[in-house]
Image 1 (tube, rainbow, N blue to C red):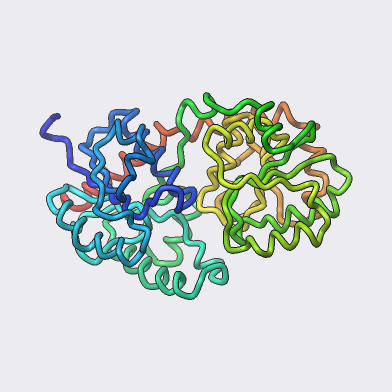
Image 2 (cartoon, rainbow, N blue to C red; image 1 turned 45 degrees about the horizontal axis):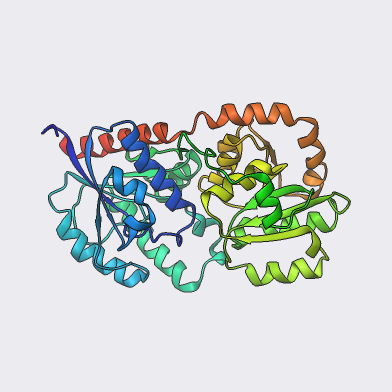
Length: 376
């Protein structure tokens, strides 16, 4: 490799496979994009033990160094960042910390990715321990970071306003989808049989049952405004902090026959379910980006989204962006049917602005901005 390529260390010790939600997909796609565009850096990813087995394709493309731990404990991960990682990365030209915090010790030339600052808007959705951790670590990390990267302008502006950080120290690195998304999607017939969907029209919410994802809002629509619709709501994703409440509501509202729980699914099943759905419905109260709406647009499925946080910025004219009121959503399914061809076209066009290569180009700019800040 050329001697003028900077050595970049990427801290992904926070990225426990299957445990960190959309931020995992964001980073994996970003790193694949860096390979795709042949980014002018020597990149080494530092990741939890067995990360390469979970992400074998990425590990075949990029240098991955695994930690001596699976990093499932936050305390152990923080310890490793301040010891093992600090030692491993001391000679790197910069370290990219992707998990929203920066360890107390280690290389001082840093790009910090902040995926969201939901804890500022909805502190009630966090445990007391997690909230204290974020309130302590995030402001400190932002102060010490050379540059802060965010997935959307919404998060960038939130950070600038709340923490007083200058625009010169921030950079937006959009989420990007791989070129082959959907190429290996599971066939519709197989999914309809496996999940007992019959011939019903399908609405899909791809989200863990955390309170801010707002499954409760959709269940209310199924029981009231959409009660005469022949639809099944497929909930894709694991159990979150609102799981008990959601389970109770499904029974209380009498929508057991209208709801299908798939749990976590592989990418091929996710893509197949999105593709067969009449719409992806996403009434989230907070998203730092909102990758599921982008995936839907890329796969030619109309989106019905809330107008909260970053979602209007991401969806643009590629879907219906509605306020979170039952009145606003009551006629949304009719609108989807009437405007389907236009929404599909607009969604596909919108998704073209969010590729893994474009995400990687954004990251190159952020890396160059970080390196330039310390060379002056």
